[in-house]
Length: 215
Ligand SMILES: N[C@@H](CCC(=O)N[C@@H](CS)C(=O)NCC(=O)O)C(=O)O
Image (cartoon, rainbow, N blue to C red; front, side, top):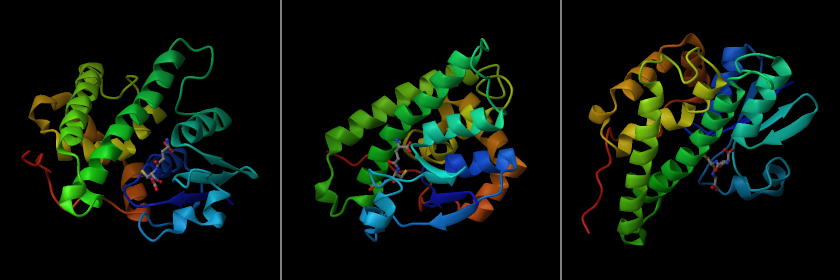
């Protein structure tokens, strides 16, 4: 049985959405970001850095969401241009670009949501990461202008943004990014995305928008 190690609203949402798109039956095992369980030997045996996602599949465990997305598309032969296809390079670029952006979003999540007390936060770093996020969003906006999906047709590269989609507009206003906003609306309306949210949980955010603090 395929088992996805998952936390609501985390990068494992990327994999859950892709599993649903592929129609791949999978059990979900839930973990917590805050109870210390990701540091347990049991979880570290699945994912050595203590991070989700990890996927038990085909008699092995894979960690790193980008690797899982590549593995699933290659072994199932669907939702990605395969090696040799002229679109393969673009597919790989955007899969890995999603994680570049994901790292910035993670830092903003930590600063805006998880770090307490507020004085533990670095406001200069929050400003820098907000700017860096905007730069990645400008690139994504350009890519999506005139395209419904990242490669034109829907692919696993879109699923790779599953964690990012809910996060981007919490830190950067949507007004300057109409192509991203339309793409997010289209993505969230997909039956597989709706099923993934029903099974794995929705947003972790309690505010529509997180302003940069003064300072
Ligand atoms: N590059 C990794 C990053 C995974 C990652 O950092 N996951 C976060 C959740 S979004 C996590 O498990 N964090 C736990 C921690 O940092 O302790 C991937 O894409 O799978």
